[in-house]
Length: 239
Ligand code: UDP
Image 1 (cartoon, rainbow, N blue to C red):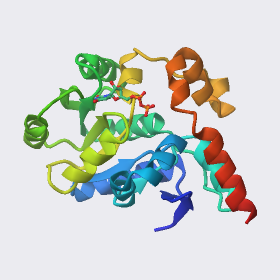
Image 2: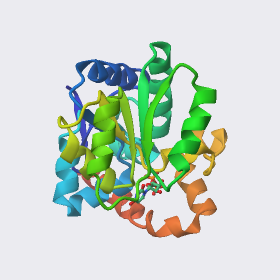
Image 3: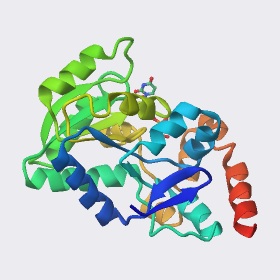
């Protein structure tokens, strides 16, 4: 499989449509594989967190979550076909699953958010079965794994933030009954309507991250490593 290295993380070189097709194939295999959607922050974190790096390496699908990754790949002279933002990927995949009466389990975010997201999904994506919901603030995850096993869904949205979601999926890969899991950060908050996505123009210009910082200034500490990421890509790209 063609993977492209972006500062230590190997990304699958796929368009959105190809990523969704691959995901449907993995769902058919039903081996509880998982997909990750790293952004520059996660790539930088993986350099200092060996367990996170290993979890990303073992993922069946590694998708370029944003413009930071595709720009860096360009600077490194190994361009990716395009970006595949996690939330767009999840929505496109659920639309396809809905056509065949597939099911999704919503795992993560604060209590009540996954239920609100389920409600919205029932309206936006009729045909998809909601196999269950669990919030992401637990002390013991055994009951959650049991609940997922019992529901045996096609797709599990794992929205615990990074690196919690990647580590959780790596630990449970091949050990729970489901088609495919995907680590999708704050996507349940977006689906529930609690967090607005950037307007289309901002997204097209690759400025979604800036919009999120403006809306939620405390995120500034999270993008603080972005300049380092860009510099590193520029340095390596020249070398
Ligand atoms: N979260 C969770 N359990 C935790 C920590 C975080 O379920 O222990 C959730 C949090 O409520 C939010 C998501 O994980 O819904 C992380 O969202 P964030 O916006 O940080 O992720 P991003 O989209 O930036 O990756």
